[in-house]
Length: 263
Image (cartoon, rainbow, N blue to C red; front, top):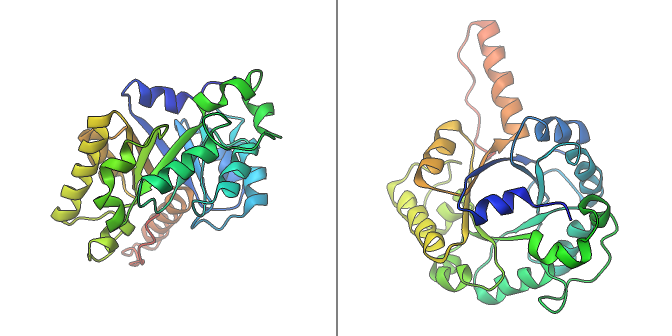
């Protein structure tokens, strides 16, 4: 079976950089994937994307060496199984609050006896190649998002859930759960301390730690802190920032201020 190179890197304690895909477009998916990111993630939760788009975007990503992930809309086993059958090599599951929820996500990613994933890798076996049914349990990444007060309270029991491969921090929702205003990349000292606490717990239990960023400065900051995987923005964010800068430069004016979307 094709190796999940991102997951292999995390298991070795190495760092990877990925990009978020929030637009339903095969061209942008292929173009971003071919830039050299270690992985790319299709966002079914907040992206302007549905399952049909995912089924078209995953083959586009497959023209590159980037590992394809999908953030599912919610911790629903059928949603997880369906994107895995379409060829995702891992899922990021939002709003995980306790070990029971984390275990549910893990089970949906694993074939029996390790889980309850139903067999039917219609495109996954085509992409993954020979050995998929036997090796998928070890190659598919299950990643839980920590972004709520309950998730923080139950952090250690979530992180130590058997079979969980990674923790992913959603900075904006984490800020909201702490009663802080949302600004995309969160500058508050107390937010940073909470992020460091989550990272330390992951390091303690040798579980990969990841975080979303929407600026180069924060990407570099979190890599320096020791995160295993960092999202360096989204295709939509990169497009808007570059276009806004070029437009302002062409007009000789200052860039217009835009509301942060976290991407």
